[in-house]
Length: 378
Image 1 (cartoon, rainbow, N blue to C red):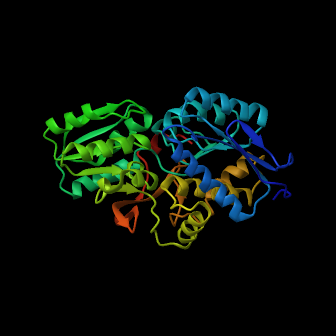
Image 2: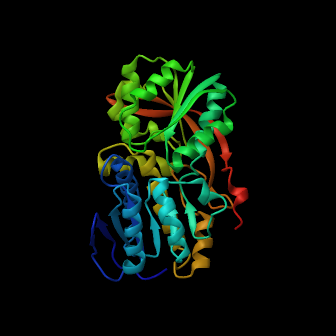
Image 3: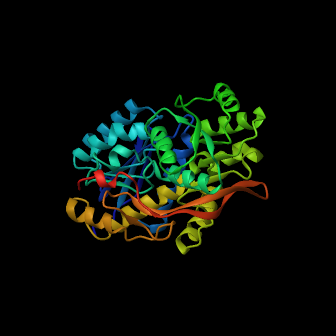
């Protein structure tokens, strides 16, 4: 290990560095403003909690807000790599931003560990030895939802998602596992808030169910409008549309809805129990899926730094591949394309006192790997 220095945190457009001698420098580009801010805040908070718990002051973290704009993310990444001289990058929420940043960063010798976005292109033909995804490949949670729809005897789903890489991966994943018919398939505008036209199409479609992927504020808007519409069809979705931050805004309209996730607060393992309690104590809210992913990403990085210097790229890469850390998901392992092989669970939205949350009701897919690994030639 390197010698100990000081942990620093930079937020938005400024860097608050407590020392100039940090051994490892991490650049976090994430969404801290606008409609998707809650997702980036949770990734950041989970990540920083892990560093604080570890008592690690040999790492400097520089954090900036991408405002959910690809051009901003690219500019920030260039500055972090060229001027800040970061060793590792992380933080991006949205797949269109990941596609704009990750290939260029890894080509310059920087390690990128994704705590969220998992576009199919980066899992398959455009995989890279310096790119690791600590969350999932985009299709995965949607594949589990398609499998659940079969088990629930849903025969004619209407499916919709935003028109960007993760939205396309989402519907591809659902259709990969779902064996029924499609009453309709719609791609909405990224950031859209009015879904009157889409709900009218669902009403007229003859569907027996609705599957949607609309993360952040998009999901809040859709669920509220859907509940008010009088359309009474069962809804299935991924965790991104029914996560902790969203549920409080939606309220009772989400109760009973089934959704899929690789994590939940009630997963029974020591690391997860400690994480949920510590996050709630520090931030006075329950952790979300995104917070759990930020936490795991930081702990993976720390576990690798315990074994290798980031300047020794081959050794550090091998240490990351070992994934020798206590994940909040329990057992954690990478596939050959450096994406997780993991269980994906079916959750149900419930109410605990005044809080809307999820509970695990089944395992949807066990030890599940993504469909693109065979195209990765590493």
